[in-house]
Amino acid sequence: MAFCSSLVSPKHPFIKLFLLLATIMRGGVGQSYTSVFIFGDSLADTGNIFFLAPSFHSLFPPYGETYFHHPTGRCCNGRIITDFIAESLGLPSVRPYLGMNNTSIEEGVNFAVVGATALDAAFFEERGINAFTNCSLSVQLDWFKQILPAFCNTSSKCKEKFERSLFHMGEIGGNDYNNPLLHLRSIEEVKTFVPLVIKAIASAIKELIDLGAVTFMVPGTTPIGCSPAFLTYYETADKEEYDPGTGCLTWLNKFSEYHNEELQKELTRIQALYPHTNIIYADYYNAAMHLYRSPTQYGFTGGTLTACCGVGGPYNYNASAQCGTSSLVRACDDPSQYVSWDGKFLTEAAYRLIANAILEETYIHHSSS
Image (cartoon, rainbow, N blue to C red):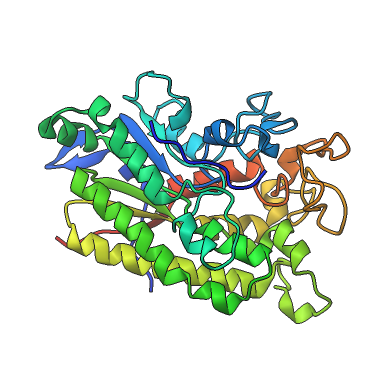
């Protein structure tokens, strides 16, 4: 088993996604999903971080308090989007790869790692940017290849199983931008990373297709301009920097939109090259923006841009005193009233609503054949 490590202490067709998730149509015969394979970062990690950085703050209370009643490694007070996706398919939460311990992988494996990037750690080291972990997308793909013989040992068996498997590709790429931006690197520099990030995601998808994968869900990045962490780092007296309807930083959200537009273009190209595949674009950005634009409609009365678990400042976020690091950093009484859990990640209530929105309606790329 290979280990990575912690390095620090255009519009598209609109369809009802749940119809596709409930059944994969092949020659008129419906086949239900029986397994999910997940790649990505902290928005998808269900516990791999425990084996790589056991002192990481999400491994301490009050993380996990709402649903699991103890920390699980999820960067949340409870379940995350991938938990709700698996639940909708009638499958259990997908277990982390590093904690499998020779248990069955028939229902899938989660390779996502908190802090993971689409690009390899060497890319950032060459530019003087600290990466949290070297568990990049290519490392996660290597992990998948290592477990493949235990999942299916013949090409026909793999084909049969992969036709009933969902490959959840992310979210991935956010940390390729977040790390340099939170270290105040210029947006002009970070924008040059986008084509490389998109290429890395596309390369992983194509490699999985060559291995037999058929159906992919590929999330876009979230609106980082609404993150209390970014709002704290880039706080300014210039009101023109903020969206008057949400209070989010407009320029950062424009950057998120740029990544998502480029990702969708690339997914369209891949779909055209592989017409037998189903490539689903999960629009995390707009699903989340509904919560910021109409918070009270969804019960978020505690504040959309204020962290539930944090301390200090207008957004209740302090990078030097993060949730889980001290008993002085407390969680709010009712996380379901907040969009943000800890300033960087969302509450279970917010993730549930985003997952529901994805399951009800999303963008999909497919060939016209």
